[in-house]
Length: 201
Image (tube, rainbow, N blue to C red; front, top):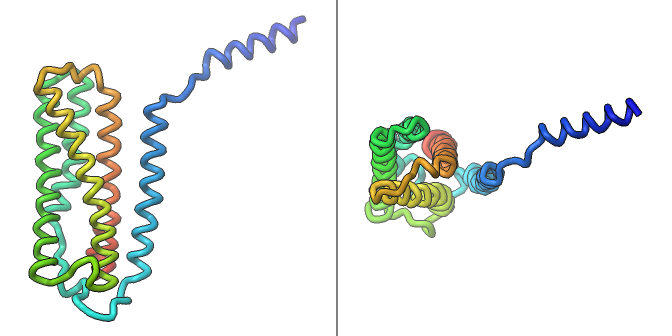
């Protein structure tokens, strides 16, 4: 009898101490893992085809280091953390300020990417069909830019509903998930920058 009671007590303790993982956390984790696998494929393809183009232009001839754009994007990971912490503490004014700063830095990065692509296409005559370099470059950098755009859409959506008076404090969990996604986008850029603008040149 004592053994049975002990077993029941252990089972009750286990049942009380174990909880289903948060669905949102699991969802964003699986999203990041899936997207990481996708980026890995594109990065490997870029590395495999480095130097295989039969005609120009070549990376060293047309690519400039996007230092300012990189600083802006990586800085946006810092501002989004400040925004998240401000919201957690209920400081709505500070949250808005840091959130706007994050958006501004993201927009600067996208603007710099657009300027770079304009130069490559119209001045250097590098398109996605020019050579293997053009194909892999636009595929990899474009994939990353598309993820930045998706993140920017959600950042702008949060800003819009916040300034419209929606109590964004009640959605802290979702803001945190968006922050995680933004960190992922920034981390991927470190890899893309290294592969394309450092190793690839």
